[in-house]
Image 1: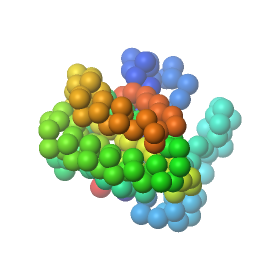
Image 2 (image 1 turned 135 degrees about the vertical axis):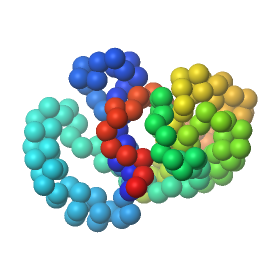
Image 3 (image 1 turned 180 degrees about the horizontal axis):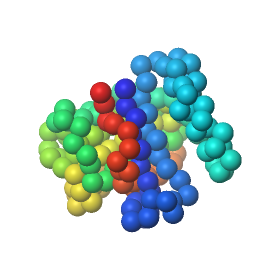
Image 4 (image 1 turned 45 degrees about the vertical axis):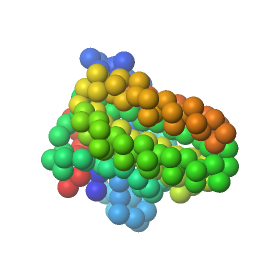
Length: 181
């Protein structure tokens, strides 16, 4: 359904020099990933070659979408930059509270941040304490405006009791794959 790739922002001018890449993929079911995609001819050729240079192997984590939007405009417009946020909560109850707060933030972003193309909040199916946010923005400036927003600051400052750790990283699209079909 989605097959979108990014290179760390610091390698925006040298894709081949990057030691890592983010693949954001959405499937209709786990079977679509494990039985269809990973067993496809192209992946059967890719995996042995890629495995030889991977330090971690495939880092597969499974999520379900909880709030937000994948493609606000519906036209798959390419973003200038995207942001991957990983949140570890302090408990399953804290995860539930954070998901409620993030749903409100997603609604705010949808209604007010015109440079935001994607703001998708997902919860891990593998762990009770993992949340991720996949964000795509028109430009670096649009991302910076979001990161400096009062709404984001209020959410983070008001969630110290729920958040165990939080990390984010910027990526640039590498013009491979698609946002949705």
